[in-house]
Image (cartoon, rainbow, N blue to C red; front, side, top):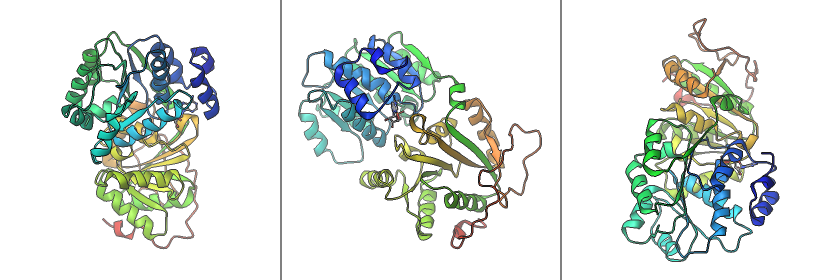
Length: 411
Ligand code: AMP
């Protein structure tokens, strides 16, 4: 499938795709769109950054415009986080630009109810929601799902991890039986297949092979570290030597705050992003990165889901994630839609088994690198699964090194 014309999309879709400048479908779009246009249920294994939103939104919009308009929604998209909800709402508005008044409503937790209630009281076509807040509105009788034609579960693995299994089943049951159900997930495991069995009818399956991930345009490197102070020296080194928009991932909210504070004290344009911040603060931090008002976001996993900043070129994992799949979600923040990205990961020797789990998931080893002058004291055992590469940053010392992460040193 080499271009969008072969999908027989309606003219308003082709027009907007041309305007945005998408030249051809991404692999997941090429595989998914014909099946979705044929009305089939779908289980698709696709990470963020692959163009999966277009894979479900474009054909769903096409279908929506073929049927008479209703006062209640015909497309329901369930997502795990508010950031992803807002991101998809933006895409929906973008793609429906040349359709006559397609209205999107986006609802999520952590913000006041009244504006959402007002939005839900008017006619609308597409509903994008996190399960918890959607259930709240359903309890109040504010949502009618009886006209849903397409139900999408996006980042389904994350939704289940966050304990949304029951809400997802409840919401699915509130939709008509003859709806189309599309399930997108970064990983497909037993839990996902069980949910699929309950809410889908003979779904077609699309899996981008691990090989597709390993061939990815994201350059991945692993740096072994002795302790937290060592990690902070490396972080400092990479932030000094690499320009452009960067997300630094940490495993705790406290560390995200501490690192962001330290970077600010060094005069860097950095902010934290984590679940203890209210929605306004979180949106503002992401928007600042998008607008280049800052260039470093120090984030925890949940808060960073759904962030789509095409210019983001660099991801630094100060800590490994708790789950291997989150590694894919993290590095998928860069290298969006075929762009080039870099991802560096710091790991202590105790992290070896998690590194191996991640490597099994991505289907290849992550090359081990060192930065000259900052090598780990405990060298990697010879004959391990890791190949050693050369640091792109070589032996450059940092002349401007003055104030750094002294607070972390020696911890
Ligand atoms: P997603 O995986 O849906 O979050 O999309 C990742 C990025 O790819 C977003 O910035 C999209 O706007 C972009 N994108 C989606 N489809 C295409 C395409 N066919 N060509 C180029 N960029 C795309």
